[in-house]
Amino acid sequence: MIREWNQNGDDNAFQYEEREGCITILQWKGSGDTARIPGAIDGACVVRIGRKAFLSNKRIREVILPGSTEEIDDWAFAYCSRLAVVRLPRRRIVFGKGAFLQCVRLEQMLLETDGAADLPEADMACTGGLLAAAVHKLDDPYLLNPPEAGTAEWIGKWDTRLMQVLHTPDREGYQQTILCGEEDIGSMENNLEYFLSQKRKGKARLALLRLLYDRGLRRGVRGELTAYLREHTKGCPHEEAWQIVREEYGNRREYYDILLDTGALTEQNFDAALCDMGTELAEMKAYLLRVKEERFGSGGFFDSLEL
Image 1: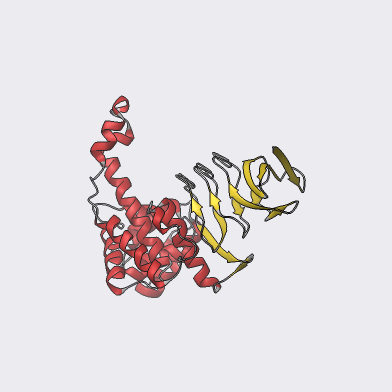
Image 2: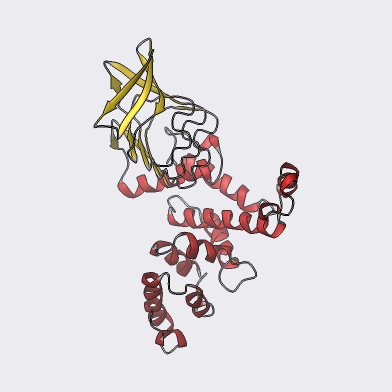
């Protein structure tokens, strides 16, 4: 029998089904931006998030799943375009096909034991960031493994997959894109230069993410990621690494610091980068102007410009 559950008004409402003392969440009907799934309802454990339960929800930003969760079914959270944080129990969970498909803003999948963090804050953020990226940046379902996530072995597997992506020729997959979109010949998606640029942007996102969450990062991998950013920064034939930081990370200082620390922003391209920022990123432009003065000295043309 399908039943309704509603707590705290309509913010946290859903349909569920109980069978043999186990509950499946069938459809989310809440109006809030946080879905907090209870561990039990009337003595029956919530064990499963059903097929398409949250499909295409445009409001949800955070999902908190109970420690009793055993299964997240096909497309349960697919196309949740604003979903940024998922809190999962650190236990074996069966994930269905495309459970988090196209959750493009997913930044953290945080693992908890008995409802509490089981890692130091910095390690938890690192593991959560890499786990989320495994879903929607690396597209590797084998890395979606809560019990193993964050271990040295798991991080090694993550980096192996990262290197596979980094070394894949940018043009790979283009012919398939054309074949699958014959009716859209001439569209931006079927343009080769656009396709190659998107591939380079994907690699730049991964490089930036791994350098941000650098726990267990081996020297050789760090060197390759650093080289990739240097080869795709402002002033290079392809500037995707710089474009990602400027267009997608805006005023997030940590990403500019990565460019500075890796040598992707230097005295040679600093003024060009500042010019490229225009007037939209005043806070970060002010920060970079201070860095420029400290590292390279003042007196340049852009030091005299008002933000």
